[in-house]
Image (cartoon, rainbow, N blue to C red):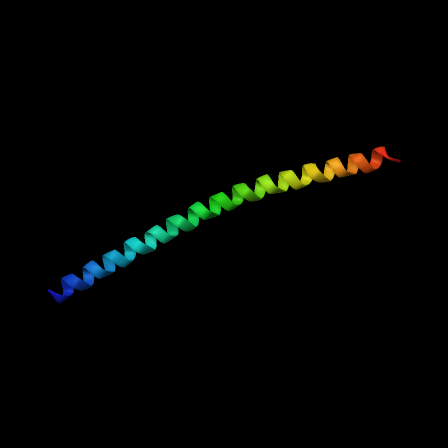
Length: 57
């Protein structure tokens, strides 16, 4: 009986760890996408600023 409880507890812990790993992977994917979007926005903004400054000269 005790061994069964230990095994069930370990199984539960493993399932929790698997969920955390999946959440971490989902977060990594979302952060990568957000980083790419932000980088593109910053680049485009820099280009606009450069064009505006260059046009004034």
